[in-house]
Length: 191
Image (cartoon, rainbow, N blue to C red; front, side):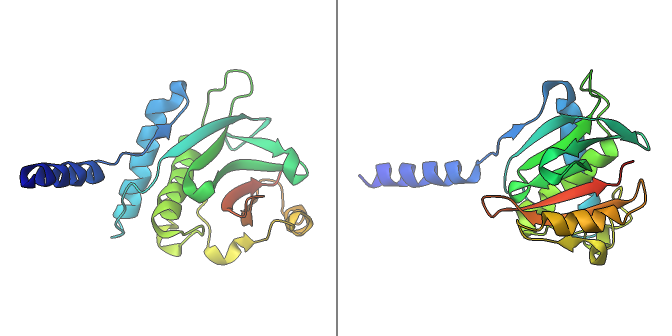
């Protein structure tokens, strides 16, 4: 009986040490997503921040409607048609990024790396901000004082700040979704 308990204990230790998280990436950009995930981790590690794979992640593509400096943006109907470059939500486990409207290609690697940085920081540290220590490491990583935090019912407040931007300027916001989970959205002012 003692041997069985020892084997069960060893088996449980092996199982708990071998937890793997599921990553669901579009087939055509699977390699790009893995590369962006690894690159963003390496950049964060480069400033002495330790990361573990705490959760899986799913990446979705949104057909773009306009290019902004080579990066596809889409109008988000749920945000009164404001333009979005990318977003990361559900504790970092969900990324949506713009792509070419017909081919579903032309996903921008810089935006994808940026969103994977949010994946790592949200899932490891519950950090939805743009910490200034990463400002030179990621595309459009803004000073955290410029990030606006809004509740779920703040669409009009976000829209009024957005409307004050010049075309091509970005607005990063942290909002609650309908389930009360936070997400980080990178808006860009369109025409």
